[in-house]
Amino acid sequence: MRARHAARDARRAKEFEAFVAGAGGRLTQTATLLTAESHEENPRARRLLTHALAHTYACWDRLHGEDPYDHARRHLAIRFADTAWHQYAPLGRTRRHLAGPLAGLTPQARLILVLRLYEGVGEEQVAALLGLPREHVHTVCDRATATVLHPPRAPSPPVTEAKTAAT
Image (spheres, rainbow, N blue to C red):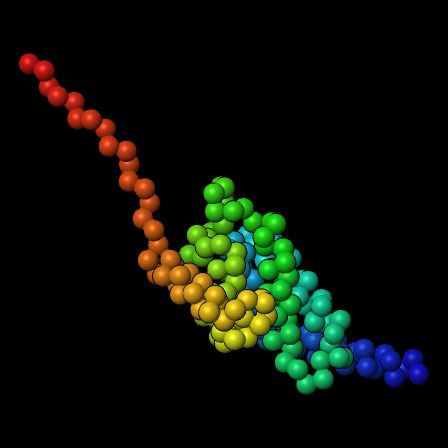
């Protein structure tokens, strides 16, 4: 009995290691885009990914033919959505820890944009995953795409009065 459990656990560990070797890089990139951290320093992204992979490993035997990548990505997105509203500063506050082209987006806009454009998840699936109307997902994605492609201009420097030369 113990030998059978040990063999099953060893097989499970090897399958999971192969999954992580193949999908880990892309999932890391997805988490980094979600958190809008730099690629060099991304502790929040790594923490999100660790939780998603731990959850996937815990459910490994119960996946029953389900795509483990989809399972891990779904858990990553849900965990980000659950924690992002509390961990990340609103637009009005300083966001020194954010970097990259998605830094100017709200957490919800980043999540929708990354799932739709980077991960290729359909509008209906994103809407169902986040519990939002499909039209809202469509609108947020369009606005986020426009913001990324045409970022708002930085404020121009204040105009100072020209000094008049008195003669």
